Amino acid sequence: MKRWAAALLLVLLAFGAWLAGRHQALSAPPVWDQQVYLWQRVWSTQHAPALAASRDLFSSLRILVLQLHPREGLRVMPVDTALLKQDGRPLWLVARLDGSQPRWDEERLYSRLLQLVQQYRAAGLSVVGIEIDHDAATARLPQYRDALRRLRRQLPADVQLSITALPAWLDSPQLPALLRQVDSSVLQLHAVLSPQQGLFDSRLALRWTQRYAQVTNNPFRIALPAYGMGLVGVDAQGAQVESEASLRVAGSLRELTVAPQHIADFLQRLSAHPQPHLRGVVWFRLPLAGDRRAWSMNTLRRVIRQQPLHSRWQVKMRPQPQQNGLYDLIIANDGPADAPLPTAVTLAAGDCLAADAVGRYRLDSTATQLRFIRTGDELVRAGQSRPLGWLRCQHLTPGGIRVTP
Image 1 (cartoon, rainbow, N blue to C red):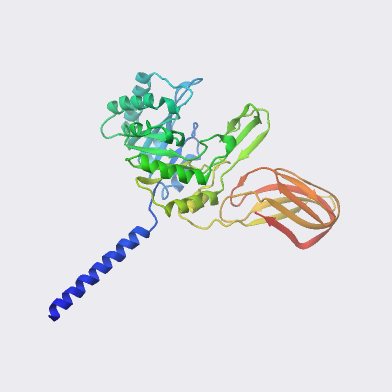
Image 2: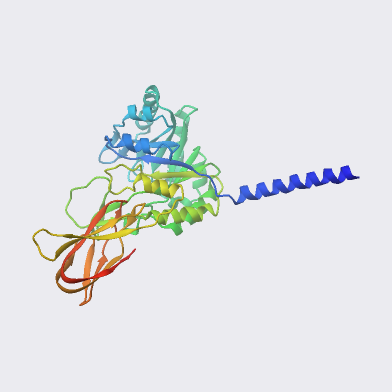
């Protein structure tokens, strides 16, 4: 009898341990695969250190290799294949097909894609898949489905096929058939409505991800922004989008940014509601040192690893030489991560002869304080600074500076 009791106790203990382990597995946040887009049309010496610094972050690289545009035609990007061979990570070759061109020369396009696969593999690169980035009109999804089916037939069996999917397609009954033509997909969650409406809406992004997970039966990833952009010439007729490089055109410039904390909060909410088939994140885009609109690598690492993103701002006063009482004001990001410019900076000051704001601030002043109010968005990398304004005052209250994030 004692033996049966002991055996039963062991069974109960084992069952309890199994239940505890299962509960822990179910409650643990999902471990997502992290990948990144290399979207630069011109490669530079900045790519080597960026790739080296990203090796611990991204399992695979998605490289823009080909673009089809109505004005430029079919353009192959001059990629540094020797650098990619040295890097050694698996590659996805991305073809960007402009949505304003619903039809294309399939024979020429697919032939060029297959040539690139062979060319990259002959250079010793590990090409695992092709991603088609085509923002097709919802009404044209059946045609896009048939085009993907024809491409799938021509690809080698060991080359996967993926597409960039748009939230606008979620209401189409044709979407499931489209997704059955590919091995996986990437749901784009940034800049999908219009640049004028912002780069990212976390509320919509969560809703879109949940809906998409119910539509697809294949693995998918979400594309998230780690960048900003500028809108040049904003008016009733729209605006041109400026990204890594200046467009060098006349017109007003409006900056659009995505705060790293905003994306970190979204990922935390998403991890609390695991979605079927969601395998990971593809970040847009690989941070280069000279890409002033991309997050820094360190900030992207902090977001991925769920590390604190506390902001810490310091207002620095620099006296102008041979100008008694005249100071330039600088706002410096002394925190560990990139952060949007503060909403306002207030200085307690009296007997000010003159003052003004510069850059992305305007000045509201009273007899006892100067208040610099932000007028436009800009993300400031950790360790960098921006001009705030200048002043000539007879009296500044010690400790009288207040920064409102």
